[in-house]
Length: 390
Image (cartoon, rainbow, N blue to C red):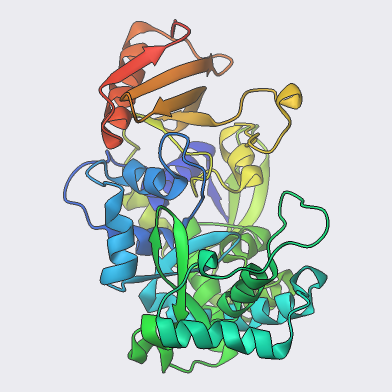
């Protein structure tokens, strides 16, 4: 019989797996945090702080913005590549990421979008400049977009650089004001990580097992979506081949229904050892890995969330950059914030408690305290409310 896991226990396990089960205090170990999560998504938008900084700060509020680039550019403990989106991953994962370099390298090579019109000689010249001059950003090149400019249009040299980056020929050396600098991978990635040669089956096994360990439990789709480094057929094959090492579970959803899933062999020990989540109220980023899979989020928490950044303003239900509010194992509200770093202010532009949530003074005080903490991350001294919290 399948092991039944009630909804509250499933929430508890998932939040613990995501580093949100305990208060975000104590000694800071950024690399271990990224290893525990598996990856941290990067995003260019700096509404209060960029998503990657907010995600790490949510796990430990001693984190500060310059720390991530040091880990990338100086310590070489992480590398950048593409999961479901641009992300940083622990350098130790590099040997099992070779299949993703091949998958995405082949994919972009076939893509009409990446047909740049540049000759092979011009492509070689771009890489030769990096080899001779060292890390270069797209600003070092001068090709122009031809035809109509669209939202995702990129000049030919940028598409060539990205082709080589997806294929693993180039790596991100460092960033300045979030601008990426490309360098030869052999000058960025430590040699011993580049020289590992694992069979494709071993890489797939490590990625699928790693995904399930970090999920705590999951369907085939959950496992596939975690890294987005394998297709569904590959993950189904992995599950079938490893079924004797997995535990069949049934997970209770927030609406009382049950769903079949798989869990690691140590699931019962994890359930018994995982404490209830902290009752601290937390402001999560729209790109936080705990809420990225919207289907899983809704199944477990009944929280219907959509990131409306790219939705036209007139069609938004909530707002441009809306942060979910997590308290214990429940999402209790949403808040829209805006920061002005020059004058040192964090402004609440809109606020919505979730249906059925009583927004009393203790809860309001918790939110005010967390807003002040969030403001300190960007050295803002003032929190303004355009609308009252109660």
